[in-house]
Every structure is written in structure tokens, then in C-alpha cells.
Image 1 (cartoon, rainbow, N blue to C red):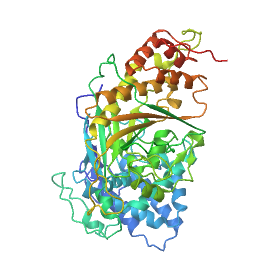
Image 2 (image 1 turned 135 degrees about the vertical axis):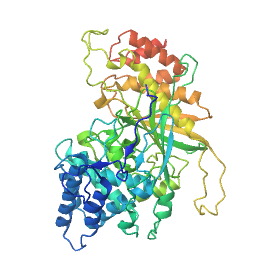
Image 3 (image 1 turned 120 degrees about the vertical axis):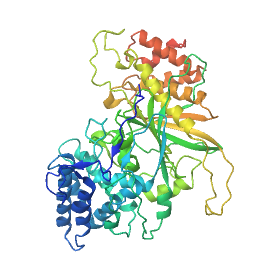
Image 4 (image 1 turned 45 degrees about the vertical axis):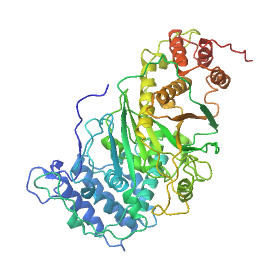
Length: 565
């Protein structure tokens, strides 16, 4: 359960309380503990900006990597970090000087965007809005490894160092992640004309220092960049609804593909007079954020770098909390890149074009996809996936003498149902109104608002909590279906909802050949989410044959099951 006590805020580098003993003697201060920001400015930002543009790429990158290593040791007592992947990626750039300069410029705006020098953790039920420029400042400091580790984080911190190292994880995806982040930072960071010395913090007195007045160099699109926002909502519920109340099932659409696709093409019924709001489920660790692997969570955070700062202010997810991240842009999130495959097979989808996707999304907000049908995500929903892969189960405990499914251990069905319900219910009730749509042929300042349409929430999910997490794909699908149906029925607004299940061909067939027929029986049987929930609980008590989970659910619902040869 979520604690009632507030968690400590993350100290940012411009906070006077973030200090170092300065083991390398980089500071001129004679104090025992020195504030870190002057050291970052003098030893990294200022020195890099003074490097002549005629410096060879190899020398520039080597100098930059050396300074990053010094900062890592000075701030985190981590000498000689492995930065081989980062070094290789920077040297491969056609103009590493410009990219490194852009990273430094974005990092130098931290005081302007976060004058308090602290980043409070999200409280249950809280919604927080950040501008894109604020998020990019945080990402830049994750990049230069200057952020401390939150008190709740015990797996490696919030900086991008795990992507820079070739010592662990799968190297190729991490190299791709770094390439994407470099592309993102190069594309989006504003260049400020203010000298860096004018942006130094006033380290004496109150933490909230006056924000410097900046005179930005005019850059096309910078105004919209500064005004765009992303909302972070820590969904929270105090209890599940009455699960015995008759509750209709929402529609279920199943899309199979030859391999995992993070942003797939989903057929849409264009005859529906609705605005599509796509909710994309992330199978998340309880500590949300990036890591060295090529799981769905890592791939999506690399594809959409605006998600990377979530680890800096999101506390560990509980059974009754979930993180929803919603784009304020009319076209939803625009991925920098898109992946196909999973784990060692993960690779970039070369058919994806970012500019075409962004332009087509802006003109197709009602359909939920671009011109090619690739989904447009409005909200990413991180649901804490229960880790079942490490549980040792006794043999010979179910009806066929095999191993009991870990999903049916006491209390786990309820826990997972609560997690999913919390996320769906939180998103449905946090969207107060549909954004005003404007004619594509007129500007936002002169166009006439179009009538609001009813919102249809399209929940898109891969096999949540399966794969490396060890969950059963059929049980998890039933839980998501039940949770979404109850959340829709109990929402404060009149919402239309559908569940889209993305699954690799043969992934379910491998555990139950007749799964499509069984789901068809459920859909056509007129049963409610309450009845499926009861059937699932009955099945748990029966210690079922793990090769016939859906078949046994159908039997528990009172339907006949045809014999399959």
C-alpha cells in the first residue's frame, strides 16, 4: 500500500544542499563540502563550450568523456565509469561538436526551469504538468550523469549511465538508444544567447533564487516547443469497486503479428464520430524507468525520450498506484524512432519516418493514427508488472500433475486487477475535456472551434506482465479485460472504451491451441466482467490444467466446449 508519508524531493545540481567533498580538487572553494553546480559549470559546461570548433572529433569526444568521468567521480564517487558506447556513438556523428554544445546549452537552463533546485516526488492522485523545455533540461542532466539517486531507487539511479556501458546488457539495443537520444537532443534543444556566467546560481540564502531573464535566439518552432506540455498523473484508488455488480464487457480486438511492434498499424472504423484517445500500456517494473535491457519499457523510453525523466520523480508503484503520462500536443506523442522485435531481436523499424508521422498525426487526431494507420499514443500508462519468474512452485499440485500457474497464488489475481483498474480509472477521470479541434486549413489563432466529439478510449496492450516477468498471457488478458470494463462502468464520465491486445503469432497457441474459439465463446455469450472475474476465481480454487485456462473459464461460465482434434 502507498505510504501516507511524503517522500523526500530529489536534489537537483542547482540546489545548495547538493554538495561534494570534491575528491579531485576541481573547486576553488576551501569548504569541506562544495556545491556541485559551480563544479559542473567550470569543469564541464564552460570548458566544453570553449573548445575550438576546429578541434578534431576524436579529440573533442575524448575530452568530453574525460570530463564526464571526472564529474561522475566527483558527484557520485564512481570513478572511471564505462562510457564506451557513448564514446563510440559520439565519434560516429557527422558533427559531434554541435550535438555536445546543444546538450550543454540545454543543461545550462536547469536553474531557469527549476529555480528551487528540487524535484518533489509525485504524491498519489497528483497530476503535474511540465513543459517540453523543462523535461529536456532534466534529460540533459541525466545524459551528463549529474543527477543524484532518489532515496527509493535501489537499482542503479536515474542517469543514462546504464546505456553508456558495454559491460552489461545487450550492447546493440543500448547503442541504438544512445543514437536516438543524441538525435533527440540535437533536434530539440534551444540555443540560448545568454553567456553561461549569467546563468550561475546564487548559492547563498534561499533555495528559490530569482530566475534569470534570458534572450533566446529566434529559432523556428521554439515558441510551440516552449508551450507544449506533458502531464504526469500518479493514478490512485483506495479500493476496488464491488466486483459482483453486473458490468458489461468492453469490446476486445486482437491483433496478431509476426513479431513485436511497438507502434503497430491498427485498423480503425472511420465511421465512428468520436475522438480516439489511445492509452498504451507499459509493462513496468515497480521502479519505473530505463535499464540496460531491451524490454518493452526500455524500448518505449528510448523511442519517446520525453518519458525518461519519470524515474526522477515517480515513487515506487504500489498495488493501488499507476503512472499515466499524457501529451498535451494535439497529435499526441511523436516517437523519435520505433522498434520492432524484443530483447536480442529488437531493432529499428526503418519504415518509420518521424516527420511524416508527426504531420499526419496532426491532421488525423480523430482516427487515432497517421495516414498509414500507425497508432498515435495520447497516454502511456505504466502498470507495475508482478515479478513471477523467480517463484519456485511445487510440482504435482494441479489437476494434470503439472506445475501450478504462479498467477493463481493467493492474492495475486486481486493485486493485478487492482493495479490495472487503478490505471484505467485514473486516466478516464483525469481527462476533463476533449481538446478543441481546429480546421487543418486555418491557423489556431483564426480558426473556429469545431464541436466536441465523444471520446473513445482505446487501450492498447502487449502481453502485460508476461515474458521476462513470468505471468500467464491468458490470465493477464482476462484481468485487463475485467479491469477496463469495471473502470469504464465506474467512470465519472460517459466514456466509450475498447481493449486492443497486441500479440505475437503463436504466442498464445503455444499454451492453448483453442484460445481464439474460447474468447469467441466469451464475447458471444453475453456474460459480464463480473461473471468472468468469478469464473477466474473459481478456476484458481480448482488448480486447473495450465494448458486449458481459457477452456476452463468457459466451462465455469456454463458454456459447452467443443472437442478439438
